[in-house]
Every structure is written in structure tokens, then in C-alpha cells.
Length: 327
Ligand code: UDP
Image (cartoon, rainbow, N blue to C red):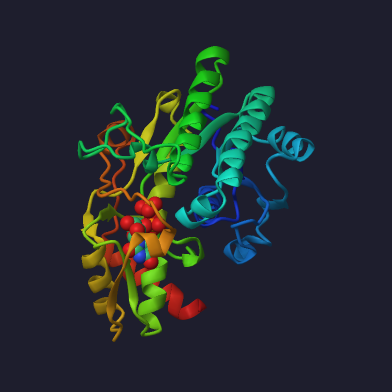
């Protein structure tokens, strides 16, 4: 891969929110992009603008379709594995689907990557930090998840298995694997259909409907613009030193959901009220949320000099414009 300027990438989940932005960036950098997606949560609208790009190809298939994956992997240098069951709603409602998709899907990707010697970036999640209380969260921290009777934690556990499996392929077979943990990633093209808070708040604000803050609204998150996130992924993917290590990717600007609701309402110039909805009503009985989630990004920063460039206000204004144009 060293010295090769134009590379071929396979993006799983390529029609998804993050996959579509990563495709935009890699194509702009002069690479070839093959994209595979079963369109379960991905959308053709996300990639409609790439349809006629000479270096882009989209294949509608499931990553468990071995023959298709074999053909695609045989043509690429690097696989970025983003296909997964995501969104808290989906996870709580369909835990079997979440666990099976995330574990079997990653296993399938690693197997085919090994066959063709592709480098693989594996998407994991900041959910893995679970109930950790040492803020900010660093890659080397211990992990404390909730009980297996709470289906929310199935997502984190399934992604931890993906990380273990990826690192094991690296250790045992020498496969070039780079797992990364995404913190809350937002921006244009993200839909609120799967529960993500910013697209939901923005749509509610633009329709002057009540903005639904779950719990008491004191829980906080850090939101990173997807266009910053994909810059980190592209840079990590071509860095030899990145291989075999795990990276946090996220923003460090923290905001509570109460403050976020107010910020969205102000920026959208909305007349919405802000309502508190108990977690039990939003997600069903016994739901456990993460109170805070702040990344330590010093590892990725030290390696590739990456840090987010867009503030929360930049992101919110971009999402508001995007939703005004498209909804
Ligand atoms: N949330 C909220 N109202 C909504 C959707 C989500 O208050 O309409 C809260 C949710 O309970 C969580 C935070 O916003 O505390 C972020 O939720 P999201 O699903 O976007 O991501 P998570 O960080 O839970 O993966």
C-alpha cells in the first residue's frame, strides 16, 4: 500500500450516513470506491449524487452474501466496515438482529479480508465505555457494561466482540486491522428515524412541535461532524502505524440534552416547547442511559494530528439547512 497514490476501497454500509460521506471524501482524494449496502438503514438518496462518478460503484447486497463479498474484496486494498445494526431504538426493539448482524457481519468481513490481504477498518462505538465514570474515556480504560437483561448493552457487547475479533485476526494472522470507536456523529443526511437526537430535535423544532428530551435532560454527549469523522478515517486508513490499535474518534465539546434542546430551538428560530419524557416511555421499562460520554482523542491526535474542526453551532446550522431543504 505504501507509495500507492490511488487506492481501491470497499465500504460496507456505504449508503449509510457515515458511509456516504466517507465515499465523498475518498473519491475527492482520487481513490476508487466500491460500496455495499443492503439498504436496511442506508438510503439510496444518500448516494444518488455519486451514481455517475467514474470511480464509484454501488452494489446492493448483504455483507453475509459470501459470493458478492468475495468478488468485491478481491478488487480492493482497504475495507472500511461500517455496516451494522445501529440506533438505540433498533437495538432495544430487535436485539437478536443487532447481535447477529454485528458479530456475524464482522466475522464475514474479516474472513474475506484475510483471503485477499485487505487492510480493514472496523467501526466500533463509544457505547463500549458503558457505565464508565472516568471522564474522558480513553481506549485503554476498563469497561463496565450493564446487565445482559438490559438489551441496550447488547450493542456495546456485540461491538466489543468485533474489536476482539479484529485484533485477534491481527495478532494471530497478521491481518492489518484498525478498529475505531465512534462517539456521537452527526451532520447532514442523518435521519432521526432510528432515534438519533440531533435530527429528531431539528425536525421537531422546524415543525414547531414539542422537542422531546428524554429522562431529566441532564445527560450529556459530545457531537462530532461527520465530515470531520471521515477525515480521521481516511487518514488512519493509510497510516501503517495505525494498524493493530484502537482509536477514539469524536468531539470533546460536551452539552446536556436540556441545553441542546434550547440551542436547537434558538438556532432554528422555532416556537417549540421543550418536554421531558421519561425513559420508560421513550424506550420501554428498565432502560439505562449513559450519563456522560466524552472522548479522550489524544491517541488519534498524536498519530495523525486529527482534531475536529467544526463546532456544535456549525453542525446544528448545517443540519437545520439540510432538513429545511430535504424534508
Ligand atoms: N434523546 C433525547 N430525545 C430524543 C432522542 C434522544 O433526549 O428524542 C437523548 C437520549 O436519551 C440520549 C441522547 O439524547 O441521552 C443521545 O441519544 P442518541 O440516540 O442520539 O445517541 P446515544 O448517545 O444514546 O447513542
